[in-house]
Image (cartoon, rainbow, N blue to C red; front, side, top):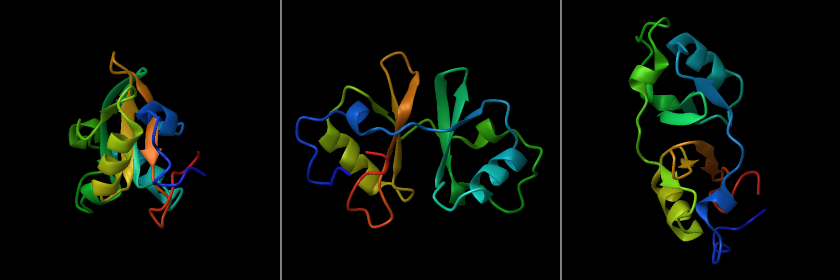
Length: 127
């Protein structure tokens, strides 16, 4: 596991772990099922093909939202980081995020993965 202080010389892409993503036509019901499948799922990433559309944190979907609504309508484009940016920038942005997750994209907007901090916020998941 890479520790939070061990990011010198690394890029955001180096810190990214593979992300499971939901297709752009997913419903809020599918989004809720995604989150219910694992307590470690704190951020859902929405893609159109391979292109990053946005992300939705678990807490961003209110209980009253219709399960048939399109999940992508609730997705936020930011925060996101380009894979070539520094590991330090990626770490700091993930630390600022309530979900401790940060989508990583390439220069064409294609999803590379997600920088994910562990529960203790002292290291990265999947590294």
